[in-house]
Image 1 (cartoon, rainbow, N blue to C red):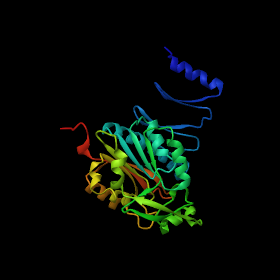
Image 2: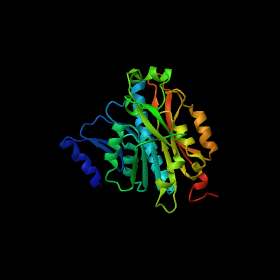
Image 3: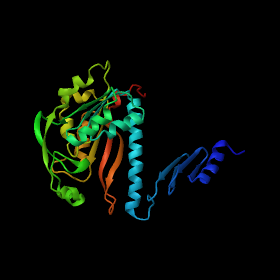
Image 4: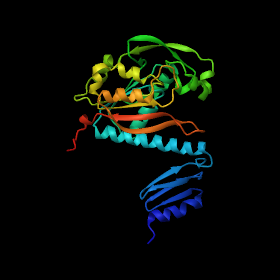
Length: 294
């Protein structure tokens, strides 16, 4: 017997909606069409939009990037729920993309965002203005309490660090004339009490995306890093910024602090070689899991 679901799928093309039928109970619908799908398992598909085929390596990497980003977001959402996280420190918040995504995936705890770049800060404040439990701070975090120069004009890649030789070869924006602005740096351990105020049993999570500066942010947590039940850091397999650590060094430091990897997701790749430039590394403190396995 034809189900109501199947009947609806049959009608949609008549009104200009393209349908990609994935099987019982699943379909992708679009006004533009052009979707491709790859079956990953008995009940899972990878779906790519128009132009995401595999005619060239670059096309294929685009689909991989989209899939990795989606999987990472879902992974983090599940981790926050499983570890009962009630405060996310969003360091390098940019325009608030990460915070908005947390809300879309169901996280309802506190968000504490840090963004020192004026243009991005204005958009971040706009994103958070109607969210009573989303705090915004107009400074950066680092190893010390100081004032430093930040390079502007690199869009989402503005950094306190100079670009490396490899970074300049990969991104034309690094060759552009840039301005700098003085930004205040605070230590994470110096602002934690205020950020966590009012939370009876804090279970914080640390997200860092600071364009090569994550290890400096991490160092600024001092001994209080032990209070975090999980964390997320963009680690580099290929160096984009001078002075930034290789992923092996960063991960070793995180593991020494008691965190263990729960997921690694490619952020960017070289189109010609397929080499991963950066990963989103998601980690958790197993001892902090509410339910301990035998």
